[in-house]
Length: 348
Image: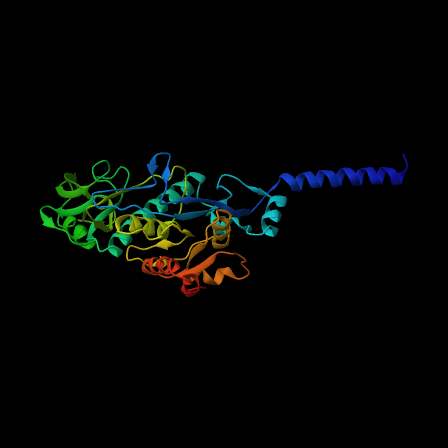
């Protein structure tokens, strides 16, 4: 074998080895691509995706789709060829991994946080929809978290609405803490809470604060919750996380509890975080979600107004409707049902 042949052979081996290495070594990016759509007015099997009890509900027509993004899981990694493909393909994106997943969190923690955000989105959507429909909603303190191993662990539960402490009516979160602090360590604290619409009495023996001498604690966090009569539950039929379905959930609930079909047979998709007061917030993956809605043959897409800046270069046949509040979304869908309505809806 000549020197030239030997050099060529070694170079080829090195090239193949490097190519193989590049193909399997993970890179610090994640891929975003269009996910699926789900009709929030439809069913999962024979069960409505959104089930409503305790209030009159009405027939709906058409489709109202939530949209999702397919993203690299927290416990998976991309290779360089995969990340390049995600960067160059239309309606796909490759993003720095640390911008999506905090490096100090496990995959389980990420999944739990995504699930919690979905539950919060559903709860906030219920409140926003009921308020938009003119249904009574009362603000109350709510147990937002309970410290594991603390005095209240196993007694109070996240989601408990606090009606009173020691017989003193509590109307705001701060009043719960103020009443607890009137106790000393090892004294009982009597709570009356609403748990799944049922009035429940709970007694917790206070402990001494580890940081503030002489102060009693029960190791709970209290936030702002809401009391209302209807029972509204969700069955998505698959694992979906994050807050971005809030707007569409609220619209679906509103359509179900108000007389007359809102969509009138049309096919609308959308996305957006929702606050209990009906404000619509920005989300990630807007271009991928618009692509998913187009693949599902929707005709219009509701875009949070603060996401309009993210639509540069987007090409779609969908009518892209700008919404800032839930009321904007309701009004826009009604406008769509009128002759020439698509042109009169607010656009980005």
